[in-house]
Length: 139
Image 1: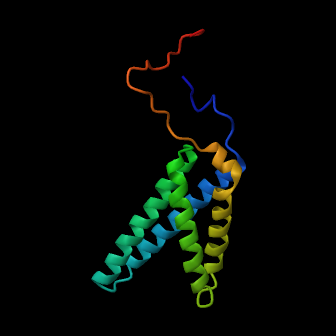
Image 2 (image 1 turned 60 degrees about the horizontal axis):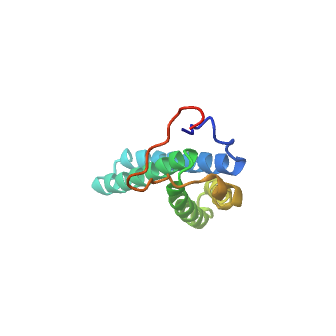
Image 3 (image 1 turned 135 degrees about the horizontal axis):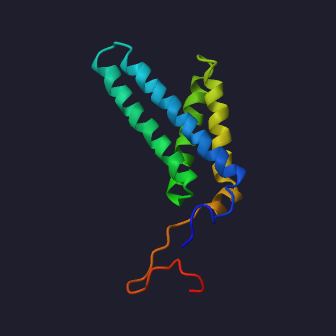
């Protein structure tokens, strides 16, 4: 049975994409916390709650990419593109948003590279009646 140690090393593009998605997810969670503690009533709490969910999806997608699941790629592409657009529109009023623009762009490119695509896989589904693989040598 193949383990993670038997798999080839993760390509740099996959590492960058997973790290970028994780970092951006944590940034969004930070915004959620800031929104919740701002004290603007239930509106801030609702926005903070949705931002927290959005950030947690980003973190979960980063973990899925790190585990080489093809299901992590779609959310990372979508969230990186969305973060890029939102931060770019905010950049004139908030210069710190350029850091999010750059991080989102790097993540978007890294997750779209062919090396990242080759590293991702579907989990193999065995047909009914097929025996599971054994760890016995020579089998």
